[in-house]
Image (cartoon, rainbow, N blue to C red; front, side, top):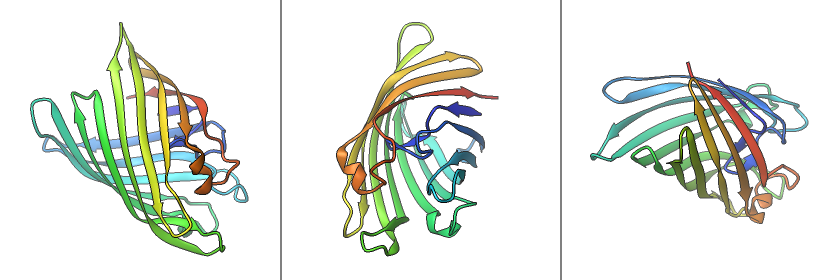
Length: 209
């Protein structure tokens, strides 16, 4: 379970700058297979008001060396309550590698990301992203957090943008607190509503059970 002051995905708010309540239930077998459900309130279309995002994911993770591990995960994103609901739904394939659970590299591909062109035509396009993240232990229960990434929608009238974050985390089991600054390059406004909040501070409190 999690409570966040702003649900940001690749540096862009999915709740129009408002808080979100989130939940995840997952499993992982001893052989590496994993799957689960994730949910959050969102606001992808102001005309529809706040609604929900539901993610279903399934994949495989395993060590590939003494200090390295890898994962391959397929995710379906659904937005019930939006009109039309099926326009916002899309899928992603995620390939990731981790070094000592401290340094992470993730590549993501979506074959059907929804996009409304400047001509007002709705269509599905390919989207790609590459991200690097760091979680470095500090003194005591503190850790330093940071990441950089690049997202690009392969559409005729769209461009890619860079995003980044930096902050700190604090563990007091079963709770975990993160406070970080999230930013994007100005090109993000070409893909999303130029008034959609970005470049902001967000705090997230997580309870694991």
